[in-house]
Length: 355
Ligand code: ADP
Ligand code: MG
Image (tube, rainbow, N blue to C red; front, side, top):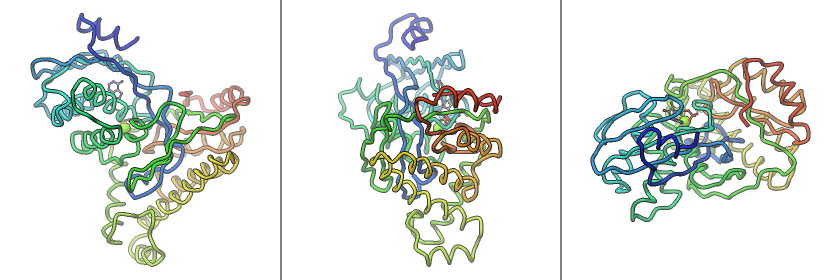
């Protein structure tokens, strides 16, 4: 159902503004956007439709077809550990920066699976912030929206994510990727390969970002930063490595992932720009191995899915997103896509196709 129709059914009026915001898939560069690394996320054709009308009072009503209920709140509420927190936080922060002056009625419909590592959370927040910004007389640019959206996740939700998702969603269009330097937010828009598809398959394993695993990895990186005395884990020197190795094997492995993933991402950006897709695919697979062995963010069933994706003909495949569940992304020749997907899904009954 379109969000306009959902809005009409829920509130018995037409919305003032409506938008589509894409989800994103990270092609390579995992868990390094908060460690000074380069990342390569792409915006998706699947995303979130939002319809919104600002209100003259401070009340907020939020409807989503994923939950089929209307949540009633106001702009002074804090997070309540409910699905509506992300929309609520967006409205609260839209008020903080003057995009809105009061509450709003919102209807949300989506083609993007939630909690799958495709960043439905950032799509929802960026979508609401851009809609409310467009209603205001304030000037805004895509990077400031991404920074504000990150604040909603970090400060309002308490999710210590980096800036990658918000930048990918705010600054590029479906079918394009951005080579993003997370140290200074400079980026280059990159076209995806012509003859290959970046297939996204959900593993059927669900994780919650709030379940603590993501936070634990972030905390480990914070300890590494304290030990080496700066924030740029991705550019650690050999001496810093030796220092870390003497303290903890786990931390040494986490750091090794950050450094190698950053280097792989640089090579992958070069390969994709040169049209060297076999090399790009190999780097994707190496990235998975590093996430599995060093960052320890995969699951055995996801490792099997990645292995079978490659054995059945993908040039490369890897877990994508925060980890501990969710989706894999595989690079596969378009002409082989259908038969590849069919065979892969028949071997993995819990898995399902996303894109
Ligand atoms: P991901 O970003 O990987 O999809 P998260 O756990 O970070 O997973 O974000 C999922 C949360 O974002 C949901 O629990 C919900 O609070 C919010 N959200 C995303 N999409 C929608 C939607 N269509 N309707 C309502 N809330 C949504
Ligand atoms: Mg998220």
